[in-house]
Length: 363
Image (cartoon, rainbow, N blue to C red):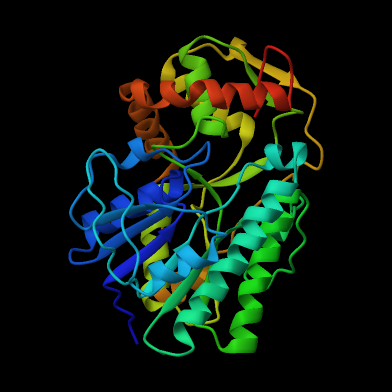
């Protein structure tokens, strides 16, 4: 049976994937309201959503704040007043798409504690708030946990792609915290018959991505003719998924997925990091002499690959974007939106400099 939400609560909606998902819903699903709950930490940027109004609501809050979460889920929340809004009453959400997370692997290596705090404790607070809302007043409701392929660990060159049955074997503090959150969600499904699902996606790319991640970092540095340091031999393989394809897949799982199930989401574009960097340089008309090889990072997973047969078979979902045209479209967006990324560039470069080398940054 299809689940037809009238109001979606998105946690972390001011981030890269969250802001693109909100835009996708507002553009493709008329009549659905969106509540964006975001603490606006370093990677959360309301400028990514500054042109939205009407069915879009924003509340600045911490996903670990049980009391605020409970009020919002009960329909008793009030929008955070900004320069564009005056603090409207929030509609009552009938589902949660949980995207709020610390998500940068390299930051987790430098400091694991915030990842456990946000990704595990935050998920627990949200699950408890949802359960507290549903226990006395049961109603149609869904909780969708947005996770990552990194919880599966690393593959060898000839290994088959990850399936939903692949055992979890996270290799970084970030992926371990996401695996912990996924297992909490699973436990609520099994113990409390909680109406939840989990998606695990591959590497996303597209507009509005904070420029500490591979694609936007390489674009912004190449535009400035700065060196593009590449870890190790550059042959670590990732599967690339356009963020708009990810948004459409999330909607399909939310509305038509089977409760308690996990669904892999991938772009069908396995490529070494070096190939992605070379493609970006080609699109920008920049020389490959900008590439600089540097020492690999600790615990760097060699290869990810996603088997997406389940979501294709059950929900008839497949990615629409081919990688090269999607990458070209992404480059055009960053070239045309310098004001957006230049405002956050100092924090992105400060962080990457602190993580890696003085005076330089790497993937």
